[in-house]
Length: 301
Image (tube, rainbow, N blue to C red; front, side):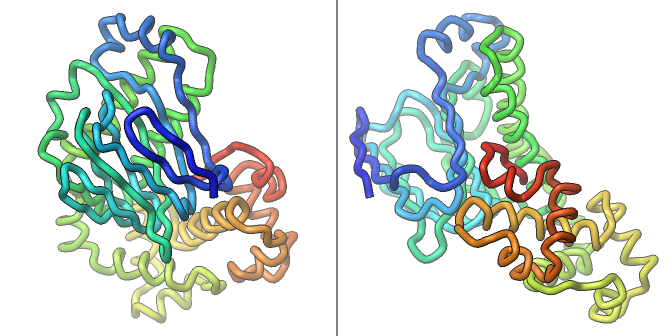
């Protein structure tokens, strides 16, 4: 384990997390573009993704000049802000106000995977950031939307610096904060009208190592194929089996980055005993082969 000293605190972090992605924008570049009327409203200074971040620990007794936003993709971690402790689980977000004493650390038993961004700007005051409170995304749509927005942010922040890209980053950051604090929660509708959907999604995640068929899903929940397909089409914009394949491929991406297991072993762990078929599905879903994904900086949510 390597120890790194920060300006206003201490950081404990292994020598990089497998599959991590991080960009720190040069201060002079940020200062230059932050003068723009659109950019100065909200602009980021750092953005990152730390998967399976075991051993991750930060302590900043004096805080930092920026606001810090976290979105937990998986696992568990703890954030302490002004002496108050918050536990962050999957599909939860929280924002640390600027200049606030804070620390945060990943669970040893269930390490978190987090997306994070440091930001500043005049419009930060319009979001309820100072009222520190975790936000839970209870619908699959909202969670997927957050992952999409962060992926967009990574794509543009790693592009050449230009006024247009900084304006785009600013608007994407606004969308992330608005999705967190202002968008109507879809959970009530889901809980009232789509109890089946929540139960089926939970069941699919719990049985990710199996090769379930549509008929087996229908039998498990005593539903017709037409109803089950319509339920997923309306709420998830895909079929039940395609959704199942999608979460399998997301788990495969995690395994490719966080383990040294062969593609054949990863395929078998996800219920695919034909590694060639698994590789075919992976490339069809993710866009590259498992081997190419493992050696790239690509993130598939």
